[in-house]
Amino acid sequence: MDKLKLMKITNEVRKDIVTAVHSAKAGHPGGSLSAAELLTFLYFEEMNIDPKDPGKADRDRFVLSKGHIAPALYSVLAERGYFPKKELLTLRHTGSRLQGHPDMKQVPGVDMSSGSLGQGISAAVGMAIAAKLSGASYRVYTMVGDGEIQEGQVWEASMLAAHRRLDNLVVIVDNNNLQIDGEVDKVNSPYPIDKKFEAFNFHVINIDGNDFDQIEPALKEARAVKGQPTAIIAKTLKGKGVSFMENAAEWHGKAPNDEEYKIAMADLEKAGEALCQM
Image 1 (cartoon, rainbow, N blue to C red):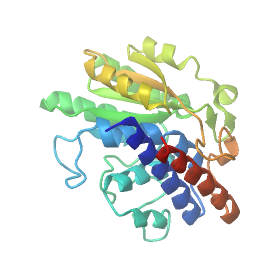
Image 2 (cartoon, rainbow, N blue to C red):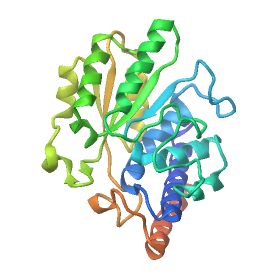
Image 3 (cartoon, rainbow, N blue to C red):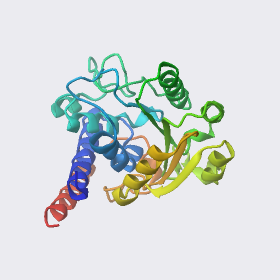
Image 4 (cartoon, helix red, strand yellow):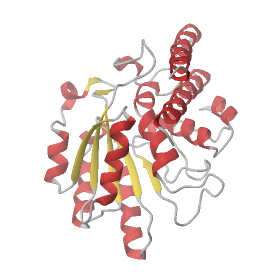
């Protein structure tokens, strides 16, 4: 798939995110928007998956360790055809299967329930070990937040991943430098993130996580690595695509009101029109 088509899908994903969170009157738009390119590339280009057979045995697995950005995952799954887009309007509603955090028992395409920060990467490591033990060919991808890596469990899991030489595991750090309490480097700095993963014997790649020209070769490089897991440190812009949400910590976990929703959608409509002119 060419880059322009991926960019157009990503813009639709961003519209879906804003629409779902607005409908729910709750949720986490900032980190969802920052991760849109990464998730779009994984589900539309990188991973061996089939929306018509979400549980196929040889599928690649994805674990959203930063489970609060469920609106991004749901939006990508809907765009990919796992369930109807109209269902996004039920986000966080009573009786909806689209809960505030992903539920593997209810949502097709969700490989692991997550939400408690630090735990998803451990599940991903377990999946990668299982593939090695069974001789399966599937790969495992997990996304963690830069605030999330303040959790000790992330590093326990990373230690085991390197010890077991899990070259079928890719850890993507969504490094937007903002968490619920403010700037990550001021709350409890994890920097330098790349050097920390290198110290845990990961193959490390630094990229702009909002640029497909850097995402694609990074994931290709990860596939070629043998004998160690890969960490992709993806620098992103929190709230990307919505003018008043960009790089603003207050949009970590709140929904836009009706007026803000109109502004956000106008921003994204304008971006979509620009893409159509390319």
